[in-house]
Structures are given as C-alpha cells and as structure tokens.
Picture 1 (cartoon, rainbow, N blue to C red):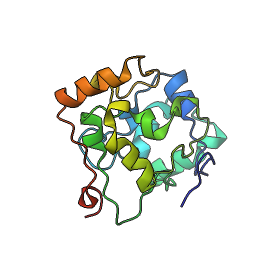
Picture 2 (picture 1 turned 90 degrees about the horizontal axis):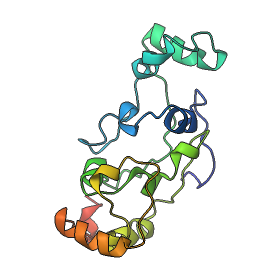
Picture 3 (picture 1 turned 180 degrees about the vertical axis):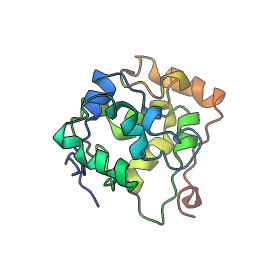
Length: 177
C-alpha cells in the first residue's frame, strides 16, 4: 500500500499545482470519465499533446510524452490511489452525490507532484458513509479546489442528503462485491 504524503514517482514530473492552480484546468479535462464511470480515467498522451505540441515543445522533461505520442505507446503512470481488487469504488456515484474531488484527493492544486492524502482504509471510508452530511457539497462545487465547507455545513449537508437521495450505505456488499 502506498503511504500518505509521499510523492509518487512518475514517468513525467506532472504538476497538478501548475496545471490546476496556475492554468485553471478543470479535473474533467484530463480525468474525462469521472462523471460517468467507476474509473476517473488517466489521460492519454494525446491529451497532453493538445497543448504540448504547441508549447514547451523542446522541454527535456517532456521527452517521454513526445516519445509516447510519436511511437503510439501509452505512458505508464503510477497509480496514486489504487484500491485492492476486492474493493469496489465508483467515482461517478460519488460525484453525482456531491462528494468533492478534494475530499479524497486533497488540495491537488497545491501539489507540484502527486501524493496520496488520505489512507482510503475501510474505517476512513466508513467515516464518510456514516455521516455524509459532514462532507457533501453542492454539485456545482464538486470540482472546485477553492470550496470550503460553510459554517452551517451540517445543516447544508442534511439538506443535500435529502435533495441528492443519499443513503448511509455501510453494508459490506456496498464496497465488497
């Protein structure tokens, strides 16, 4: 299991801080299936080359990206969050129920290199599943890195639980199928 707060080595030193905070790129630009699939998606090289065929075209650090594109061989990214095979997790249901990216992934807009912020242990997940009112946010704020829970979070959370039809799913088969 990968440790918390330890940057994960990658084939290219991709900076979420630069791309998200600096350039304002939304999570969904690279993680295209996060709203419709269990897996958020790891961007193909073509996504990187959308910009990098125009800018930083000679940057040494981007040579693996250029080689990947030219040779039509995908980059092999190291998963930061990689659950065991016996655990089922679906990004799209969490997004549709108002759970923000930063709730699990932390402030990626402050990460020059990506690391795991949360342990993703069963106890950690159950904390949210037992009290979703502490974590749920308006759907329009799910992808916002600047969102901060309001002072009345519990009141707002209880309201959103009703609106979004959130159930406190804690049965084993919710995640273990």
